[in-house]
Image (tube, rainbow, N blue to C red; front, side, top):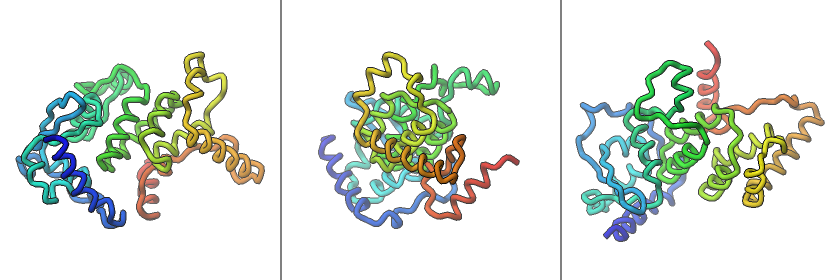
Length: 262
């Protein structure tokens, strides 16, 4: 039965995937409140063991054009039965469930102690980047643009050079043009020093994907050319907005202005 539902979902979404990107509108309306949203609940079976999750259908549709297209399609049986999400970790989906109701990402205990904020259920033991890379991949697979941006901002702000395992994961599950993959290329060009790698990381080098290494090589060549032409400073900084999915220059400029110190 799960295979049949997945087939119906895929058929419904294939029609959407064939449309020009501009025809798939990003959510710009007001987030539905608990009192205004439909109380229709969707059941999702997550991971190979089909762990059961229940979520308000209106929230899924609000945040995800993927699910909006699915629930607006004709596969009524899939709406009435648990929908399988077999290719996502339960831990990743737990993060998504917390986020979809709160729009908050997990924080480490150190971050909570430094800010004095209450931690709550969303605490994680430490920041490795792996959890957030997996959440970004989920948001890419199921088209949750607001979550993608928040996760991208979180990874950017962490100021941590991603471990090779995180780079390998991202390039194995995302297109090389994905903002997260581009950021990994750029941040390695900017910050990597050979002495950064301990023995365990050096053993991982042979696993690095060709696309990542080629991206680093080409990016480095471009940077060196601009440095020689004195078009940039050696102490250049990366711009968070370069890894957002702004649809217009006006949107980008608005985002930049919002990030300026008040």
